[in-house]
Image 1 (tube, helix red, strand yellow):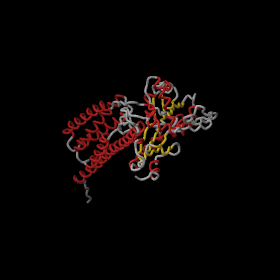
Image 2 (tube, helix red, strand yellow; image 1 turned 30 degrees about the vertical axis):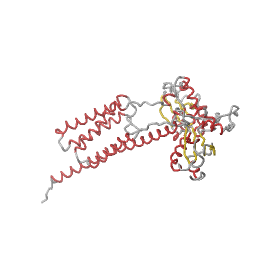
Image 3 (cartoon, one colour; image 1 turned 135 degrees about the horizontal axis):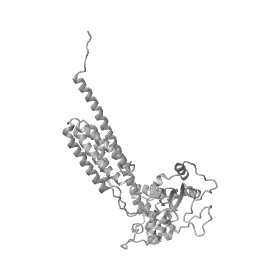
Image 4 (spheres, rainbow, N blue to C red; image 1 turned 90 degrees about the vertical axis):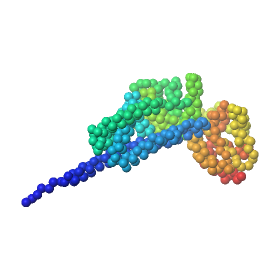
Length: 460
């Protein structure tokens, strides 16, 4: 006689617990991945902002505040919460607190979506639209609420969890209201640039007009000069193109145009050169720095889906760097600038601070013998900034023999030393006892100059 066996109550309960355990684990992993991804992207963005602030400080000679250590509190908290959710996922109170957190996120993204913001900043510089993140936050809030009330009984815990989520939403919306106002800065070069008359065509708000690739460069920046021919050729080839056109702007020329219009756009306001902007319908839709300079013809094909026709367009030569009054004709190499070293040094001796003290007294009042002094005068071109940063990092290592003095050329123009007098985008002057021992110009300056000179300077 056959018998029919039925699963025991304990077996059914164990199976249900296993299913619940898998669901809880899956939810914890999703929450943790979201939080860790957000924390990682915010940290990457923090590093980028800190590097940009450091570059601006080096370029202008004045302190430019970065995001600061306080900005790392949020990604650190997100990482800790992610680990906590994974470790304590079986405790309903953890999911109640997670519901509170996602309620706050939902309130934050909801207000930004209502405002029409393009990004919520949830993942640093890469931020999906607030409406998308609001939907994600609401889904996660629902999952957390289910897990929080499953063991307590929904009817008993529903009010508490919904109250927590609502409080989080109000707090998130309030935080969005006070923390997402655009910060006020002294000079935003791109914002000022878009107000200049030279940008009228590129800033025209028209849907049918062409896109614009704007190349902002400095005529004494080696990197700028390297890429100048391709951008100039592109601008010539697309002068009447209905889809994409090019525009080249030099920072010193922009400074003069801004002054003529009653605006302020000094050359040192550009944290790095070259800076390339892609404009569409009058708005900057993409910005390229020195680490990602686009190839104009390649970008044209990406934007239009067809190759750029350069037939019949002459290749553009690089612009002359500090051309003499009798500059050679286009296509021939510009004459090398003549630099009067003694005249520049004498003017450096006369540079004074606002209180009347000598600006470079440490150089000219020092007795002969180690340490020597190396004055590095530079523009804010990308190569100069990189060399300055490299030398600053090694300055302490060689301080017993060489003292490093970086300075921007533009900041000395008011003291009667024109940028052209240095002969190039940068120059390094080695002094001993206030006397010029060596002048390092084009081809002789690099980020290792301090360490290269170390063995040539006598020990103290």
